[in-house]
Each structure stands twice: as structure tokens, then as C-alpha cells.
Image (cartoon, rainbow, N blue to C red; front, top):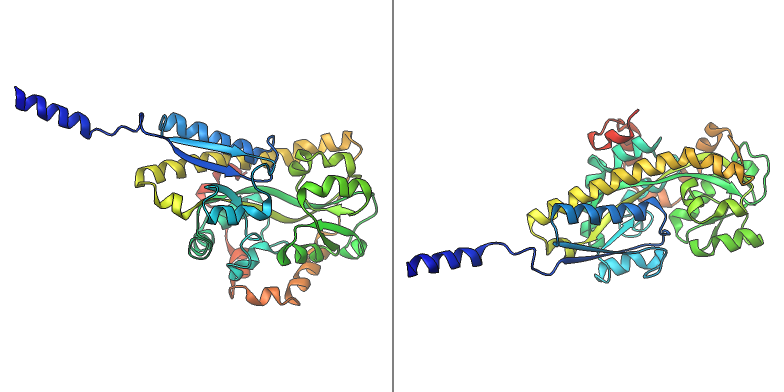
Length: 337
């Protein structure tokens, strides 16, 4: 009997005790406001993990740049000051310049095509480069939104020439500034948190945020017109610091990937829905919408990139490979017609 008791006690001790162990703390931080669907997606990710593995993970969310500004996101990941964040190809363009084509205007056709590219073969190669050069592990790409030219003061815009001299806010990096040039504007570097006041006072004339993001920052109050250029289907890659990822066992890594997929699908659907639904909200606020000559914008963008030194660092054939990628990735079923 004593032997049986000892064996029973040993078996009990050997059982996993995840419920009583300290949860794995993962801090997510970013500039998006709390009501943005990308923030809600991370909160949903935490809820999914709590249902799937009660007490095992603890995801803390710091929205609105309260913990780190956009420029500090990648350094904070690399030092493990935070563990989770959204980044995009612009954020790592200096570390993986060969993937600069991912930042080009009109590089993908629509949200389904973006999802198929970034969550397929090209996305896998990009993810490997991120891990090797930036010290982060990709958990999948999601939609930030379609970028259009939003004007402080309405004017007739049909071709890129109509935007000549327009000071358009873009983030402060070569890739972003080039995208502003690609639509014919004069790109002006400015922090996102300063955009509302800059539009209100006329420091800048325009910006290129997607409609749902504009709404999150209440930019309909300082915008008169949105020119539906659709010049960039902006992606976000949810990443975890490599140190945090490597500290997880295989089961935990799989749980995190499952939760990230739930978050990705939720955000994608919300962004696509918001693109259409919010147009009525903007119109009620007095914002008008116009459709320009898209082929003229595409031709202008192609020339801007071809003439730039920036495109000379791109991986040979990547832009053509992206264009040839079919919009049929099974991971993007939720975006299919």
C-alpha cells in the first residue's frame, strides 16, 4: 500500500499544473485607438486563449500610443519591452529592403489579393526574413485598410497632376514618402497623433489613411473630400518577439497561432465592412467622395518607382510574382466573394 501511495503521489506531481502556474504575460502595444478593430481583434485573441487554455495566457493591451509610439514599436519588440505588435513592410524596410515591393502603391489589387500574397508563399518568405533580420516571428497578415487621398479642402482631382503641391501627411520613412510621391502629392512627414490638428490648421492639406482609420481618429471633422484612389491595400503583420516565441512550447505556439487567426479574420471582416458602411457616416458629416482616373494614377506610380533608387534594392521579380499570385488562398476564405 505504501508503494501504491508513493506512485500515486508521484503521478499527481507529474501532472501539468498550468491552471495554477503564473500565466504567460504578453503585452501588445500600438498607436491605434481603442475603438479600432485591430485593437478589438487583440482583445478577442486574449478571450480566445482564455477559453482554449484557461489561466495560461495573459494578454495586456495598450492602445492609442499610451505605452509606445509607432516609431518605438519595433525597438520595443526587439528588446522584449513588449511582446506583441502589428508591423508592416514600411516598419522594416531598412532591415529587409529586398521586400520593398510590398510597400509600393498599387502593388496588390484588393484585400483578398493582399491576404493571398501576405499569407501565402511570399508571406512565408517575408516572415523568415523578419525573423532573421528583425528578431520577430510573424503570426499572420491582416488588413489595415485601403488608402485613399483625403483632402482638407475639396477640389477636382482626376489625375496625379491635380495633386501637385498638395502637402500630404505620410509617416517619416523613405518608403512612405515615396508612396506620397506615387500619387502626385508632396509628402510631408508627420506623426499620426498630430494629424487632426495639422489638418485643422492647414499645416497639411491631405492624408492617406483608410476610411475606418480616419473614423477612428475623427478625421471626418477636418476633411471635405475623399478621392477614392485605393492606391494601397495596407497590411499589418501581427508579430511576437522571437525571444517570447522561443520560450513557448509547441502546444503553446499552436494555441497562439490559432488565436491570431481568429483575430485576423475578425479584423479583416471589420475593415472591409467599415470601408463601405462608414461612407454614409462621412457623407453625413459633409465629406464628398470622388472617383479619379485610376489607370492614370497607376501609370504615374509605376514611373515614380521605376525612376527611384528605392526600387533598385527590391528582390528581382518580386513585384511580378506578387501581381501573378492568384486570389485563392484558403486562409483568406472570409474575404472571398
